[in-house]
Length: 165
Image 1 (cartoon, rainbow, N blue to C red):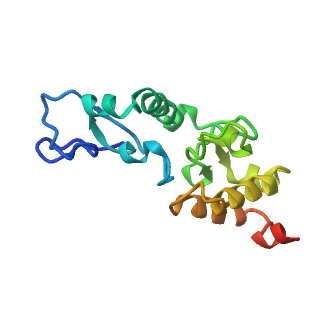
Image 2 (image 1 turned 60 degrees about the vertical axis):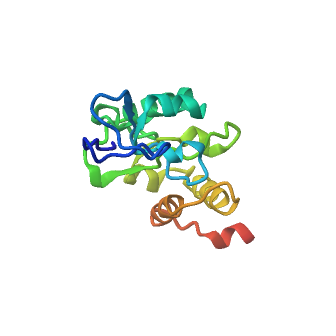
């Protein structure tokens, strides 16, 4: 979640310092994709008026709510076994990946997994393949997806070489 420092925090849209009497919204880190329209306000404090001028208000508030809910400890549930993830070291979070509803990855937005469940899951190779394809598609910019890909590949024997076979 972004931090508001009175007299120091600037709105990423207008670049003006936000004071405590301003109407503003504090957004969590909602996307790591630099090509996502919401990237400019992800993990930021934004004037409400500026947000409204962008046309992103509705989608930003909806995504913010999704991300905030998913990050609550009580909602840290493995997408495979449906059990609560108690240990942070055993949790692999995918984050918000795509708005493309026809993508296999859409269903894995904000998904969290026990690493042990992932190792045994028969869908892991397809997930890795989809992450690799998105990362090389031009629809993603930034390092997050590559980090997720590496983490997933440490849990499986799947590698990018299999794409060419």
